Structure formats: structure tokens, C-alpha cells
Length: 459
Image (tube, rainbow, N blue to C red; front, side):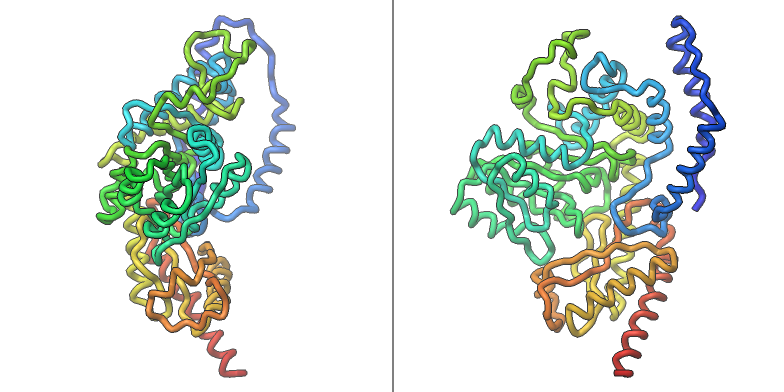
């Protein structure tokens, strides 16, 4: 793996430009001990070798996407200032950049007016979304699909909000009939709709859920932490496109720029359609908000100190790669989606694997065919290990048997779940590398399956 280093020369040029803005200050001698720095920094480099090769196309496992060059450079440049976006006193420029960057994300979802800000990630963003929902719908239940991220039930526990999961259909999407039954039987205040579940990339049927909202009056909180940016791509299936086109009708949206937004961790974003929810954040801090009568970002966020560097990096990325359909950013996401569809076709045409419907985004999940769920799970784990030995890094996930009962396959369900192989084809380079990825997967699968047959006959 070769790490991109050519752009580092630009950092020194940019630092010189930054320093020009403070030329009138008295000089301060801060010469570093370069020998000591070098020793420790090289130690850090040694430690960091103990990682999976996340930036490489042969890493197709978890949701890890390298930040773009401009994000790395802008983030690093801003660290010489180290702004704090809680108050304008701690980050004037970076606060303005955050407002602009967040407004562009809101515009991507069709919102010209909004209230929103950056936060440490999807967990904090979802917490704020459900905190507002709980204040507006006190003592009412929050529901999410049983394939939604576990953070929702955990957050509801923190906020002391009643929570219940909703069953899914065979495609890991929220079952609308089951949701309707809950709405008829219970006092539901908020429905969490996931557009891009972390397990399978499934898209909950938002159009149908909006129809139920018109009858039952609940809030809709859209968790698009993973999938939100796919609203820009041109190769979604009709059903998925319809869900994304409805996003502008929900009450709140979460998206994670540190996933498909090409940002360093941690950078999440929470958006509210109705800016008046800002009154719920109202508090007073006379020692903090004194330099400007303008609204400080800390006055509309639950977090206090927040890294202005995250806003600087995001602003720079969106300046270089605008969030527009047909742009370079959207085209890269389309390539990831195409890579997932290509892998799906290869798996579907291979008799050793079981795969259901095509992926809705860029996550592909498949099962190793076997007579029993336990043996299939064992083979999946063996393939996972064997692939890693060949530098192909997959992921595994456990899914409930209910998702596979309609496949027509005769599986002995000797356990309630099955271990699946999973790939997140997040990098646009994955499309160009897919043949090599498939060759390696094919080879290690053959070795594992032949080995399993040999053991069976030996017994």
C-alpha cells in the first residue's frame, strides 16, 4: 500500500499564507526539539503499522473510507489554530465555515431552511434528534426496525424514552404492516426510519411510512448516517430512489460526513426541518457568548467544545467536490454502487453462495451454501480468515434466520441466526479492482469448501 504524500508540499505553502494573517503580532520563539519529535513520531509510525489496510481497495470489510486529500490537508492546517466551534470566541472562521458546509448538506436533502450543526458522529447526532423528539412528544414511544443501529435503543435508555423494535421483512427493511399494528395499539411519538442500515444497507420504505404519519401524527427521524449521500447518485433502483426523494418531508435527518462524506473521524451532522426546535437548546453562558450578538453554534448543540477542524475539512471538501447530482463526488458514489451490483451478479451466478435481492446501496451480504446454518456459519468464518491471509479483508455479520426463510433454500436451521460474509464497497476504486477481489474470493472459497468436503469424507 502506497500512502499519498505528494500533496504534503501544499501544506507548507498554506501555512505560510496562514501566518501572514498574524504578521502584526510580537514574535514568540517556539522552536521545537526536532530530534525528540522525530523519535516519537517514528515510534507512532511503527505503532500505526498494526492496522488493517483501510485505504487499499483490497479492504472491503467495515465502513471505513479514507478521507480525501483536501480534507486531510485542511484539517491539519487548521490544527495550528485549533479552533473550538462551541462559541465564536473560539472559532470565528471555522464557525462560519460550519454554517456554510451544513447548509450545503441540508440543501442536498431539499431543505432551504433548517437548524443543524456538526457533532462527533452519528451516535451524538441521533441522540440530539431523539432528544428533540422526546421533548416534543414527551412520554411517547420511539420505534425503529430490528435492523436499525443499536444506538437508538441505547440512546432511548439514556434519555429514559420508551423504545420498541419493529420486525423487518425478508429484505431487512422495516415491515410496514407490523409498524401499522404498533401504531394502532400503542402511543408512538417517533418512528426512526433508516436509509442504509449498517448491516445490509437496507432502505426502510419511507413513502409508505409517510402515509402512516398522515394518519397517526408521529415524528419521523431519518437515520441516514451511512446512506444519506446516495441521494446524489444516478444508479439507484426505483424503490430506493423513491425513498430518498421523500427525505425532505421528514422532521430530522442524521448523516455522517466521516463515512461517505470523505472526512476524518469524527464528523457527524444533525439537521432539523423546523428551526424553531432551537428553543429547546436555550441556555445561558455569560463567560462564553460575549464577543458577538450572533447565534453561537454552542447555543444549538448538546455538545460543548467541538473541533473546528472538522468544519474546516468539510468546508474545503465541499468546495472542491460540490454536493450536486452529476458532479465528481456523486460520480464516485455511483461507482461504489456499481461495484456492489457487479459483485452481487458474480455471487448470484455462483452455486456455492446464497444471496437474496440486489443491494440497495453499496453493501453486499451473502451466505455460504451448506446443509445447516451452523456449518454455513463455520465456513463463512473460515473464508473470512483465509481471505485475510491473502490480504483480502472482508467482514462478517450475524443475521436472523427470518431474513432467509423465503429464499427457497433447504437449510437446517439448527440455530436462530447465520453468519454471513459482508463487503462495504465504499471506495470508487473498488469497481476497477473487482476482478482481482473476485479472483481472490473465488480461490479462498474453493480451498475452504474443498477442505470441508475432505474432512467430511475422512470422517
